[in-house]
Length: 322
Length: 213
Image (cartoon, rainbow over the protein chains, first blue to last red):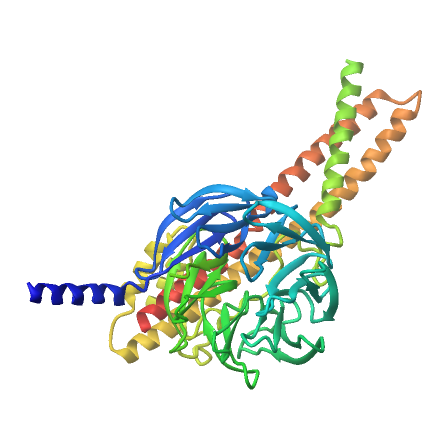
């Protein structure tokens, strides 16, 4: 009896150890679907039909829904994570592309690409509660770690706009290189990294002084410089490494945060744009739009360890907390 | 008969006008890359593929054209580069060929990738040159339609116009418009081809590297 009990515990622990499986949802812009991936088997377990042109994608804070910006349907759809069916929508304003949630997970700030606006939505009430005018073609969105400043990048104006989320107005704008696509804060909030797709650089901005302090450039031997088009930026929780997706260069650059030097370039899939860490930070998933797959980077060894085929033109990825 | 001819003329003129507006939109300054004024596709033009974007295997700089000297490699490259060969069949052929000692495998990998890259890059370049050639023809034809339409309007305004001349010009416009429209559809379809080729090089390069590692 006792042996069985011990065995039972042993089995349970074994299960617990191998059960560090998370769920990833990937938006497929061209096939109008979302692929659900199990991060233990690295298999697509479900393909969910959503609205047209799904791009920005993220879990709600309570993990009950996955929000998907369906640009051509002018809405953000909510996928119920228990049933994997579309179970509602948020009034996003026209052509939503990307969004960021506030620290409490109640408010959502949406970049409306064709409307030069950031729309503010109350998620629980599913109501549109305000808007902020920004530059032309807003895209990148991120909230500072302390929740006091919201950043939006505008692709055509080439600026990172600093928005006060309480006053709902732009308080500062910093000029960066051409076509800024994505913004990310270091975990301590002392640096804001903004990628420029056409400029081919990442600007490291001091978010208090509002000035560009460093400009990170990329060079891959044998590659034309115009093929290097930085988009997604993801920074490890302890703030040591940053990963930058280089678009049609098909590589992800690994950067030392302290020195701002590129340590390595990893060959992933074709036209890599967005990325997300698993919550244990063991893996980084990248969406590769042209090879229609997701690459899995092992963060400790800095190696690509898996490839998962998804729908057409994968754009964004979000991963469950548990 | 006369009434019918006039109706056809009006329809032809209207349709031609619509197409020209569409074509003007296609070449609007917002879309066009000033470096490539003849590029007709919505997809941005990437003139050359780069091996570094597809390959992190052993360096291929020393391979040059030597892959062409080996008939087996030449045949394999021809087979896997051809669009009629499915990707799965091409991957299987690569796997069957890539056997031997590690050194032999590495040598084969370099040759296969170099051959594949050269062959499909050439193919892609030809497709892109063709697209630009057809696009220039479309611009010329659009100009011709525009001037024919203007002439037709002038003729129609003349009270003593020769009706057979009107009819001939209207039918000429109709014919040119049809060619214009057919080519436009072909261009849209062919615009996908450079990307399809790029996807194929990448997928097969990945297969070669996976076997190597």
